[in-house]
Image 1: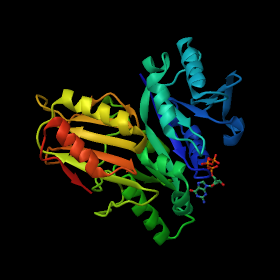
Image 2: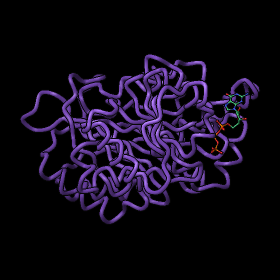
Image 3: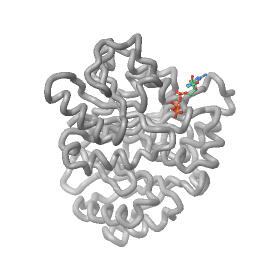
Image 4: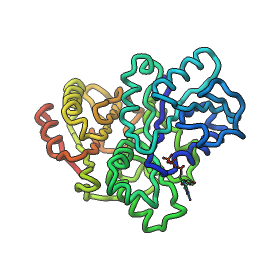
Length: 333
Ligand SMILES: Nc1nc2c(ncn2[C@@H]2O[C@H](COP(=O)(O)OP(=O)(O)OP(=O)(O)O)[C@@H](O)[C@H]2O)c(=O)[nH]1
């Protein structure tokens, strides 16, 4: 299964600039990149071969493909070309448009009858403009969704922002999505795109908002409602969890409230399992759970992090307790 990494971010936040660096980097020659238009990234001096109208091969070894219609069509085309031996790649990066919600693309990967057996979600990378993020997050729901669904956040234009501005944006990002790791454009693209295969999940191991995965340490206990009603909270469960019951509960919860649950990430201590199990969900969608090699931190309690819009954390805690019969589930900010 080939991992598909979504590169998203609000209009003008630096997606194309990042892609340009990616296309030139020889260490990313195993990637196929889906972009909106060839013209945008200025391919001419990188071009090695034209495979068809929509697909070119670059000198770095990277395959570059434009999406003219649906993303699904472009992915199917890439898959057929690879099956015929005309190109090779073992991961895909898709640049979404600046106003896109990443969720429908993720859904395509799990729902499409052909694609689902060849591709899987490999995580969401979101670029955030350090200068303009404040304003965008005050007014644009798309910007919030993109940040809420991110596994990694890449702060751009830090060279144009002053330190206080950067700090404010970082604090806000951390409040909205405490489990995403934060990178800046000084980091190497190869590293930003790497590590998604840890534990074969295709998704990075979740960070827990205590700074261990993030380069910036922020401790906030005030995860109150702001940013158009987006809030994040964690549910900590000390008792071991029955997987079947948990699965049913989560399915029902996302079925009922998926529109208001941007993201759920969790690490679970299951009955009869030594290793922790990681789960990832985006809105109505839950990725296949995966065993992690080890516990990232002590104590070995199950922990679920939710990013919600207009939904009371207490409702989730109560529903979990009622459904599973576990009484000591704690909601922590
Ligand atoms: N100074 C500075 N400029 C940047 C940085 N990242 C992007 N830019 C500039 O910001 C502008 C927009 O960047 P793009 O990479 O086109 O942004 P995008 O997210 O692809 O934009 P859309 O395709 O409109 O959604 C360009 O002029 C870039 O040169 C950065 O880190 N520092």
